[in-house]
Length: 490
Image (tube, rainbow, N blue to C red):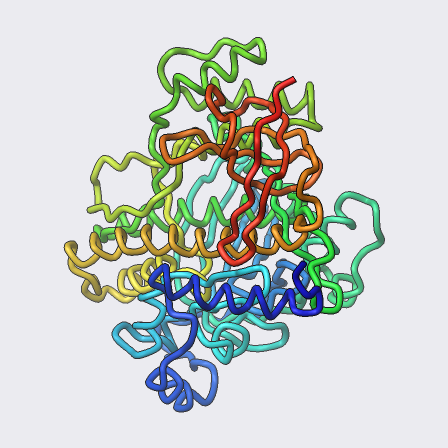
């Protein structure tokens, strides 16, 4: 058995090794650190393009432990009955110029990697959690997506510009959600800012309308189970399931709207963009079979609205097992990818969100595609030339897709190593499971009582995605993150 006092150290060692194996940089180079030493404060306004929006009731809402704050939100009820929604995005480009040593590191990894035991930030903490973070009571440069939403949740018009902003409250998903859902009192940080409570209630109301409108058009209602290890005295003690709540949905709905508005802004200025694409699913036939197993008939050709109607009905009928159905559909939809698009091109769009115009633009401290988009938007605002040629943008989009996949594999492998540490003492036990992957390279299943996924190495013949089965844990390999099951036939 593994020494339980060393779980965190074991996982940190695995994380560093796997980062390198996947072509990611776990550490910052001397050149990056030297460049970082020369940055002594946040970026200052230039007095030409930057509006002063510090008086708006900006706040951040993020995870309890988040320090790299990319977004602020605010709302304003307009006299004509519409609502103005503003999303401020940290101006990372102001301190991380294209071609700098810090930019080259970010360009290599393209994303922050969050493993079970250690975070590998895309940007040094001095920037991402301080000088380019939208921290409370600090003046910061931002790009602002300014949107007008009508009563039915339709986006009427939008604009993108630069501004100086100031956060008045650092809020958490858990605290805001409990208040919005009326299970806990108002957070003290909300009560301390006059007018903020009313502003958040307005934001929540409009977010719900945006979500309803999206789903009416065919955006998919998906709910997955995500788990992270909880440590006790550096020992993996349990796995905590993280669920969506009213506050995470508020931010998600605003960011989806902001991403679409940003693409349309670039297109209007005849600028290219890096789109976030989820293709029409190749395994639609299996999605049709899954729906039929639940007594629902889907059309033979892919139809996001019909799929959303099926999902909505299933979530209402059986909310307990709905995350398992969601996971099945997500696996069959396939992963997203980045693609460079010329203005006016016939973009494929995002099947899961049922939108054609979509990018990633709201997290430049954590994702490189968002930093690329920010540079494009700032150049368009200032009427400057496009900062990337089309061939370079195409290569970057492909690279970002590849590195995102690599980062996901690092996070999954370290997460599985943590799960292997937790399950090491339970070899031989049997569990109910759902099949999450079935291909030539292997068959995978997730346990229903413990949120852990592993490979079915014996008796997997005939299993397909979405099927229930019973498995026995036969082995774990902590170093490689392997959890192996045997199918148990009744």
